[in-house]
Length: 206
Image 1 (tube, rainbow, N blue to C red):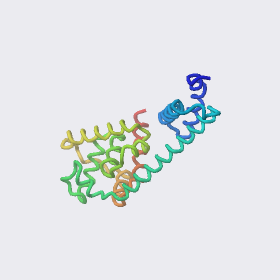
Image 2: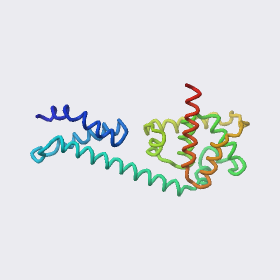
Image 3: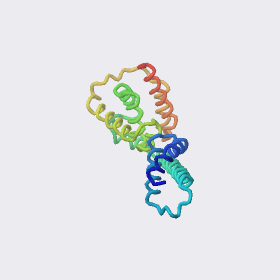
Image 4: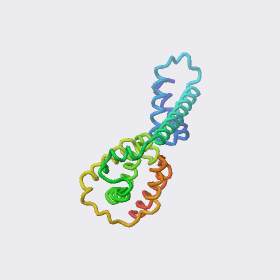
């Protein structure tokens, strides 16, 4: 069996194994492709059972991929726990506001101007310095999409923040969760409220 025939025969099985482990179609495809490329460059004479070799290689690569994601998530949480929210907040678009007196107004401005996904990505990125790898996991969106959400949010706030009416009703659990996350320097509870906020918006529009 030549390499092309082996790839055609085993690739579907490898794809299923990879997807069942990493639960992401794009990541599974990348892992299988990388495994096949390494197999093609390996010394075939040392491989007695091609199918078993490929399955073992894909499985090991998937496990390494998951371990990398776990490590990144841990590093992200550690970075978040070290974040000084006041310092970060003063560096963004609301540096002119008194944090104690006008945090409510600043948050309402964000809520009024941004769509739920934009708002969620912006708050986590700007207030807690969450990186795009972590945002991708939180929202199940590609990194480039998350980056676009943050850029779009920044542009909207910069262009029209002066026009926004801030006399909005109390934002309830979302605002309370935001304040709590600011106090402890960890957006875990805020992430859950942001996801609920996104779900409510999708329900209204469906």
